[in-house]
Each structure stands twice: as C-alpha cells, then as structure tokens.
Length: 382
Image 1 (tube, rainbow, N blue to C red):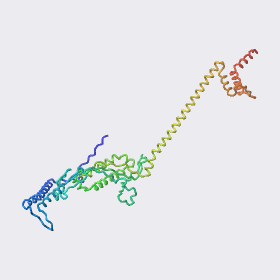
Image 2: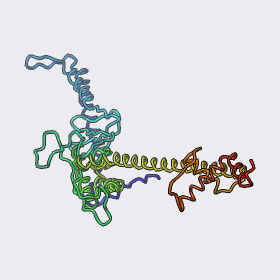
Image 3: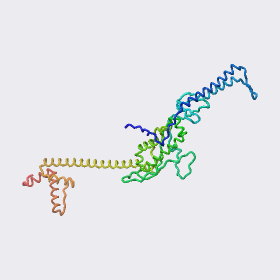
Image 4: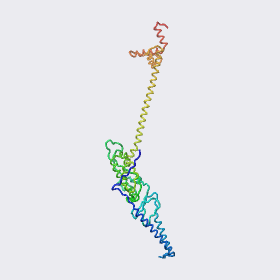
C-alpha cells in the first residue's frame, strides 16, 4: 500500500507570515559599497600621481598616504567577501531588515552596509523529550539532575466493555517521539524562531498536547494499535503551526510507549508460559497417540492369535472327526494337565460335566485310547 504524502494546510490568520525581500534596497547598498571602495581606490591613485612623495607623520610614525588608502581599499574588499556553503541557507540583511536571499557561493556583502545571516540547510533530527540516557526516570517530585529532562507522561483511560486484554488497563504511559525538520528559509526562520532550540521547544509542546489527548482517550492497547494514525495527526498539527515559518516538518514518529517495569517483566514471561503450555499439550498428545497405537497393536496381536487358534481348532475337528465341544474341552484339559487323568472326589452337577469334557478331551488328544474304547464297546475285540 502506497503511503500518501501529508499536504500542509494553507496559512491561517494565526500562522507566521513570509518575510518579504527588499531587492531595491539591496541594490542601492551594493552601489554604495562599490562607491565606497572606489573612493578609497581613487584617493590612493590620486595621491600616488599628485603627491608621490607625500607622507603623513604622527605619534612618531611615518607612512606613505597613497599606500595607506590603497591598503584600506583592498582591506575593505576582503571584508566584503562572504562565503555561503552548500549546507547553509543564507540571506543579506541591513541591520535586521531583510534584503535578499542568497544561494551557496562567494558573495559581495559591503562591509558596514550589509550583514549576512546563515543557518544549517541539512535535515535536523531530535528525539523528544531527549535521548534515552538523558531522560530522568525518577519521580516527578524528585529534583531534576543537571543535563536531564523530564519524560512525557500521560494517563490512559479505563477499559470499556469487552476490553479484557493484558494492556486494556488504566496506567501511566511514558512516550517519546522523533521529529525530522529542515530550515528552508533564512528570513522566516530568524523572524519566527532564531535558533534550533526554540524550534524543538515548540515541536515538543505540540507533540505533548497531541499525545496527551490521544492517550487519555485510549487504553494502552488501543493507543499502540492507532500509532500510525497518531503519527499522521502529529505531523498535520506541526505543519499547521510551522506554515510560513521557514521550517519544514519532514516526519514525526511516535515510539512504542514505555509501560512500567513490572508489567514489562510479566509480559516478557508470557511467550515462555505459552511455549511451556504448548510443550505440555504436545507431550500429552504424544502419550495419547502412543497409548492408542499400543492398544491397536495389542488388539491386532490378540486378534491374530485368536484367528490362529480358530484355524488350529478347525483343523483338529476335520482331522479327528470330532465335534467343536470336544476340541474346546481338549483345550481346557491341556490347561489343567497334559497327560495325567484328573480325579475329583464328590464332583457332581456342572463340575461332573466339566470332568466329562476333560475326559473326552483326553480321549480326543489320545487317538490310541479312543480306538481301544470303541473296540471295547463293540464286543471286547482288541
């Protein structure tokens, strides 16, 4: 998304006005300066031609009159040459009266008739209320140490309905902002401010007013979310004030507010707590998956074992020609005794049936014994 430039509003009745140049007076003073230089030069040449050997004596000093006036002319010319660097804005004045804005380069400014005013052309930047190491962190009741500055503080509003976030609380915020500006007109700048200290003082006043109003209407969370809009508001307010002032406001950026140390410390621990919670959640999910997979494996193994047993029992039934109950009984008998007959005294009822199944199972497991029993039933034939 393209950033739209913020256009400065037109000058109002309360805005500083442009300082008008006076080129006619500048031209007349330049002529006067040339004339003055010419007078010195003509006097020197005249004395050289008319009185080549004339000397002036006084207080024990003797010197040639013609050389003196020539030296004065040269000295006056040197004093009238002024240089303006590329990184400066400048203008010629006549004892405070604006004459002409001049560009970078070497200029003739007649000594005694004109003066030159200069200011830095480059972009100036300052952090309000000051660099972090120069902002006093103590209580406002404490005396301010030398070289330190008070912070910009404002109280946010109380949270409204539905605002239950960590930063949706009423608290005192410390804020600062960075502003870039440039001096673009020497006469307007000198007339309205005269120094960069005054410029920065007024910029700070405007920034404090806008920030205090914005913070008081928002919770800390709301203030942070609307920082881009706050930046635009401050720039517009500053440019309204600095129209025709000789100073151009390039940009202003509000830094994220400084909340209390305790709140910052607790907020710093939130990511760690969330990470630990995610770690516990992941471990629990892993254990759950592990148990499910282990259960599925055990069930699959049990199912495979049962299928194998069923296939074996079916094979026994087909090979021996017995019923399924006999095969099941043989399995039960195998669990009790592999070869030995079991005798239970007093067995009756259901237990008798069980023992019958056991005996049947033993017969099923011993084909030789089964054939003997069948031959005995058939007539005692071996």
